[in-house]
Amino acid sequence: MNSITSLLLPWIISLMVMPTHQVEPVTHSLFDGKTLNGWQVTDYYKAGRVRVKDGCIYLNAGLDMTGINWAGEFPWTTYEVNLEAMRLEGNDFFCAITFPVRNSFLSLVIGGWGGMVVGLSNIDGYDAANNFTSVVRSYGTGIWYPIRLRVTQDKVEAWVGKNDKVVDFEIGNYRLSLRAEIEPSVPFGFATWKTTGVIRNITLTELPAQ
Image (tube, rainbow, N blue to C red; front, side):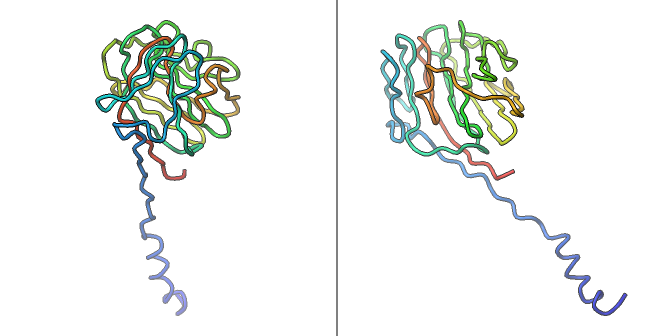
C-alpha cells in the first residue's frame, strides 16, 4: 500500500459508514375543527348544506352531490392524506376524495353505487364501478372509519377502516381522469352523493422524495 493510499483510506472508510441524512415527513392539519378556513364549498347543483359542528364537517345530502374543496395549493405527488369519515344517513358514497396524481386527478369513491363500491375513478375512462380497482365493502351508518390515501409517482394506495387496504394501484401508462360531475372538486376535495357524510381530523403529510 503506497503512502497516498494509506492516508486516504481512513477518509474513504468514514464516507462508506457515514449515515445518510433522512428527510422527515412534514404533516399539516387541513382542518382547524372550528371553521372552513382554507376550504370552499364546492359549486354543485342544488347541493346540501355544509356546516362545521363539534370538530366535524357535515356534508348534508343534496339533490346529487355536496362537497368542499381545498382553496390553496396542493402537492401533485408524494403525499399522504389521513382523515376519519362517517355516513350519517343515506345509502351512497359518504366520502369521495378527489386528489392530484402526476399531471391529472383521480377520485377515491367510498361506498358508492348503492353503498358498497370502493375504487378509483377514472382509469382509462372507466369509473370505480367498472374498472379493476373496484372492490365491494359494507360500511355501516353512524360509524367512524379511518381513511388513509397515499400517492407516489408510481402508485396510489388507500386504506379504509382498520388495516383494510382497498386500493393498490400501479399507475404505469394508464390514462387518469375524472367523471365530469366531480370535476369542481379539484385540486383536492370531498364529496357525498345524496348522502349525509361527516369528516374530521384531516391531515396532509408531504413524504420525502423517492
